[in-house]
Image (cartoon, rainbow, N blue to C red; front, side, top):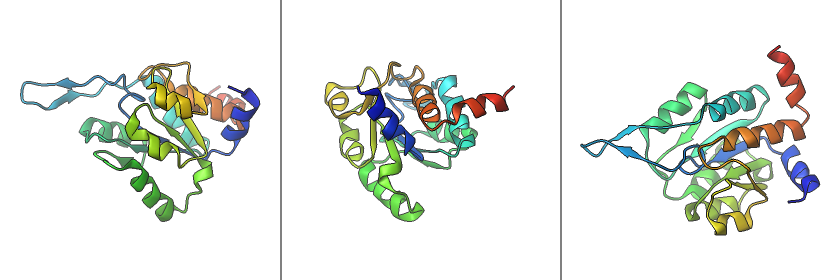
Length: 176
C-alpha cells in the first residue's frame, strides 16, 4: 500500500460507512436455546473510535446485512444516528442515504469483509478491509487493516483518518 495515496484518500473522508459482523465484531454469533441472539460482542476501542470520529466531524454510518437489536442498541449508546440492520442491498441503502443527506460518495469510506460488501465498496472513495477479510474483498481494498475483525478495525481506521486530516493531536489535547 502506498502511504501517500492512502493519506490522500483519508484526507477527503467525512463519512465512515461500515458493516458490523466481521468488522466491528469477530463474526461470531451467540444464540440462546430459543434461537435468539443472546448478546453482541463489540470492541471497546472501536466504541471510543466512534466517539472520537464524531468529536472530529466524521460521521459513522452502520449498514449490516443481519438484523440485530444488539447492534442497534450499541449504535444508540455511541450516538450513531444512521444505523441500518437487516439490509439485503447495502448499495441501495447507501444510495438512498446519499440523496437524503446530500453526501458525496468520494467523501465516504466503506469497511467491509465479505461478498455482500463488494457492490457498496465499489461506490465509495476509500475502500477498507479488515486483515482477515475474504481475499476478494482485500483485492479491491485501498487499505487492509493490521487489526483483525472485532479487534479494533474501526479504531485503526479512525486513527488513520484523524492523523491524515491533522485532527489527531488536537483531539489528544482535549483529553489532557
